[in-house]
Structure formats: structure tokens, C-alpha cells
Image (tube, rainbow, N blue to C red):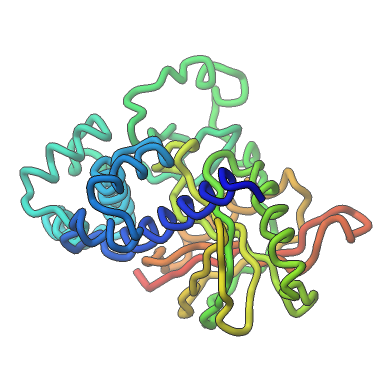
Length: 320
């Protein structure tokens, strides 16, 4: 590996550590000195390096993640007041929160809370249970007339989303230690991240299938975050603490109560499987809680005669 590639990997790994820290401390006072220390850079260089590698300034990233968390809480935590949501997400005043929220969503937090929650996905668009088209962060009023006037959407029909008949259970899931390679952008491109992860893990004796499981972790809600900023982690499970290097990181998926749906699908079935999970929530008596949703795979589709994925979709939950 040449110096250029090695340096790029090391810088990316340091920025990933910072992002992981920020996500866990959004309601805290996050100082430039602290996160620069985590990245092992001086504050002077850190914010420039962060911007180059993420296409966002560090302040813009923190603000966006706080607003995204607030938007999720406004929808999922109906009994929590707007002021509590603001303070829970690291805003020092309601006035600051209100200005920032309107800047990102083009409406007040109160107005946003009244909008229909996104339940279904189809062709990159997100719809409520009643067929209302939802809007994402930083996408203020996109022109959806063409989609809305098409024959498919003249009359909302749940059959457009083909909800799957599957068993969804509430389970206590254990803590899971993983190593990961991070991917940002379109979901169907994560295969490249898995290729790099497997190439790294193989020579280190970490691929001991079927004991080793592959897991895709979702860090962002695609109904809120623009797709080009949605982050996923391509992961494999590990039994012990593993020394990582380059762009490979490690993390623990926290155990607890999860809604778990089991699916056997082809590569086109993921959208329908997630629609099924989201519709289940509306009738379950549960709501999502803090934590990362993930897909836990039991096979490799290349080894399946029907080229199907056998997996569980696992979403952290709490009672309404």
C-alpha cells in the first residue's frame, strides 16, 4: 500500500471515531478541542480535515445530527414537549432550536409534529400510512407533481407497497461486538464496503462462517436524512476485542428490546421488508427507541440456490 492510500485510510478512521463520539454525545457540550483530541489532530487542522473528508464543516455536521435526532423524537415521542426535545438534543435555548429547525425543514417544530409520519418507501420516495408524501431534511418543497399525478398514486393503495406476510416478535437481543467498514450514500452500493471489509478480515482469520455473522447497521433515518448523507456500516461479528487499522473500525451494538422480523428476500425485497416493519409499528403498541437498527444475515446469497438473503431486521423499541 502506498503512502497516499495509507494516509487516507488513517485520516478516515480518525474522522469515523469522531463521528461515533458525536452521535453518542449530541446532548452534551461538544467542544472543538475535545473532538480534535479524539482525532489526534490540532484544532487548527482538524476542522479543515473534517470538511475535506465529509463535505461538511464540523459545526454543520453537529447541527444537522441534532436536528435529525430532534425530528425523530418529535415524531416518535409524542408525549415529550418540544422544549424537552430541544434540550435533549443539545440546544441551549428554544429560540436557537426553533430558528435551526425552520432553517432545515422550512416549518416549525409544531407544524412538523403534525405531519404524517413516513411509513412506506417506493422508488426513493417516502409516504405516510395514508399516502401523504413526506419531505426530508434540507429538501424544502421538492416538486413531486409528476409522481403524484401518475396512475400509480392517483388513488393511494397499500398494495403498491406489497406488505410481506412474516412473523415479527419482540426479543431481548444481546450486545454484539463488530468490526466495520463505513459506507455513505445509496443503499445498493454497500456491497463495495463489504468487499473491503472481507478483504481485510480474511487474512486475520476473522471469517469463521457460519459462526461469524454479517450485519448492516443503519446510522441515519432515510425518511429524514438526504440519501447522499445516509450512513451504513458493513459489519462482521467478532468474539473478542480485535485490533483494527486503516478504515476498519469497531463498535458494540447495544443489546436490549428489539422488534425482530424474519425475511427471505431477493435484492429487490429490502424496501418491501422495511415497509412491513414500519407498518407493524403503527399497530404494535411499540415505538422506536435510541439505538441503531440493523440487518442480521444468516447466509450469503451467492451460496443460495435462489440467490435469496435470509435475514432478521432488528429495530430497538420501547412501549408507547
